Each structure stands twice: as C-alpha cells, then as structure tokens.
Length: 351
Image (cartoon, rainbow, N blue to C red; front, side, top):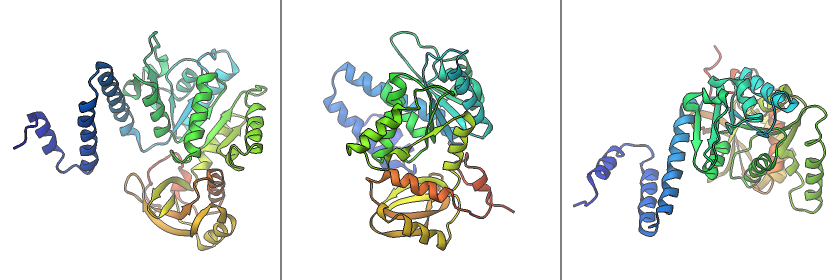
C-alpha cells in the first residue's frame, strides 16, 4: 500500500490521462531524488525559486504561442532624447505593425523604448529581481500578466531564447554583449533553433560598424569559428530593414526539428522537385551522410507541415543559415502562410 501523502496520490490520479505524464513523473522523481541529497535551506530556496520562475514564465507566454516574438537588447542607459532610444522605439513600433510581439528585459533605456513603441498589448517584459530596486518601465508595467519578475538570471536567460523568434541588438554594454554572445553560442552549438540575429545602430554610430566584423575576421583567420559562422549575424541600417530581415527569414522557413533520422527544416509550403535538385547540388557539404529528402512532419501545434529532411553536419550551422536564405529566396506559388511570417501556426487554406 502506498505511503505517499494524500496530496501526492491525488496528483498521481490527476495525471493518469495527461499527454506528458511520463515526463512529469520523471520531473517529480528528480525532485524526490534531490530531497535525498539537498538538506540546506539555500538548496531548496534555489530549487523552489527556479521552479517558480519557470511556472510564472510559462504561464505568461503559453496563451501567446501563436505569434512570433522579437527580443530587443540594448543599453538601459540610453536616454529618451538619444538616437538609440528613438531607434529602439521605432523597432518596437515596426515589429508591432508587422504582427510581431516584442520582448525586453523590462528595464529602462532601449528596453523601455522598444516596449513604448510596441505598446503594452504587444509587449513582454522579463524583469530581474535585484538587491537594489529595479522597477519595470511604465510601458511594460501596464502589460499585466505579460510582465514576469525573475528571481534568477539563468531562468530569465532561458526564456529570452526559448520564446524569441528573432533578436535585434542595439548598442549596449556588458549585459547586451553577454546576451548577444550567449545567443550566438547556443545557435552555433545547436542548442536552440536558428533565429535571425540583427545588429542595429543609429546612422553614424560606430559600435556595430567595425569591431564585430574585425572580431569575426580574426576568429575565422585563427580557425576559432567556422568559415561561415559570420552568417549567424545580420546588419540593418534602419528599424524597417531590421524587421524586414526578420520577416524574410520566416518567409518559407518555419523552424527546425531534430529526429532520429536527422534534421528537419519545417516549411510553410512544399518545395518542388527542381528546388530539391538545386539544394542537393548546392549544399552537399551540409550532409554527414545520405542526401536531402522532401517529406512532412508535425510542428509544435501538431500541424502537418512540408519539410526538408537530411543528416546534418552539426559543425556547419553557418552554412545552414545560407541554406535557409536560399530556400526563402525561392519563387514559390502564392500562399497565405508565405504572406504571414509573423505567425507560428498555419493559417486557414486559401479558398
């Protein structure tokens, strides 16, 4: 007979028909195992705080999973009269007008400007609790349950990348550069799906004009990154160009999925056999074995999508971005899904 408390028994009964019961049981098992080894108050404050962060963030984002989101990074020190602040506000406005929602760190400066441009109804703020008071900016404070107060930086960083479909990075300090390089690291190592990373600065601002290219050239020259890894970054000269780069990234490409058979590029519309032949001849270096094949696969909403399936050489993420660009440039028949790259879910078929 079970000796588990009644509350745990009830929890078990409530999970009988849950579609993810095995994963939930595994998570609960991990917590029980931690109870055997973690006996300090600090340990359980960490565990409880991290789980609370996960709960709060999942609750905030879950009702809004159908729309793509653009995260805007940049300095909290940019003042409202500065060209950087005004550009960030325009990014938020352009993103909202194109159907995207905007995520920021909920602070001042660039974050405030992007939330201001997008408006509370189209903004998310991922605030961080600090020893000194950090109040969210007024434009995201009005967003209600779209504002999440994180206890830990590591859970906050997780949701920046987990929920973002694109990054726009404006001039900023150590924190901005930390977010930029962490995103590039996770993309390069395949720990997150490919997303567009766009560097943007006001005209005449020198921060993004020289050192990123110099750094990339130096890293490639020394063999410290792949020859095509510079393709992970794009540059834009205006807010409208930045948003258009993001729209184009999702014109045909939807997302990636890793399966036992290799990597799948999920697409909005199917490719023709002639397109497949072009890909096979132009990108053989992306393959660890075999060849490219057309197929179908389910997305996160269980919608059936056309896909391109292949055994991907994980060291060639830069070339993968080049393949995505080539697919997005194809001249394909009109489809509502091609006209709405800001949507994560399939639209109703054309009449």
